[in-house]
Length: 164
Image 1 (tube, rainbow, N blue to C red):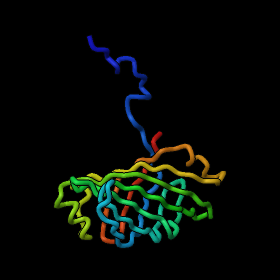
Image 2 (image 1 turned 90 degrees about the vertical axis):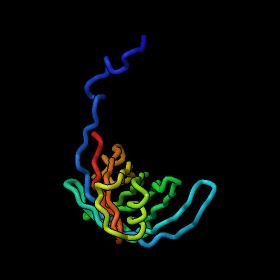
Image 3 (image 1 turned 60 degrees about the vertical axis):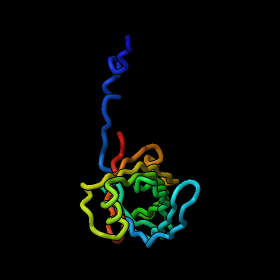
Image 4 (image 1 turned 30 degrees about the vertical axis):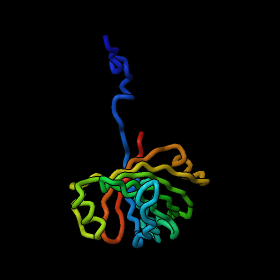
């Protein structure tokens, strides 16, 4: 007889709870196309800036971040992003995230062409982590955030949520 693995799971493990962390808008330069490599079709976009705003922290994205993308054969895109955030009160925070943008081939092609596409027509999710030396924002070192995003011609907008 099969074991019922969920029978004795504590309530805290039965669902994921989140709290809004911030909304972030990234400016993204046109991609540098590396091309088809043994690990997939690669392209890289530099992130020259942007802004983030939340109840507990607000600020700007510093120039020099990058968005390394792998285009898969099903036309979905794997993201590997590194950013430097500067809060309005002068603290520096490194942010990294992995992500996935997936959907119908035609929808993803329209996004790549810079068209405005309804975010309800594709899947765009991220998982972010942070590093900072700031005592004020040190709590970020110990959280994982989940994001839901949309892509437009100039860049990306995400809502990030701290996983509680």
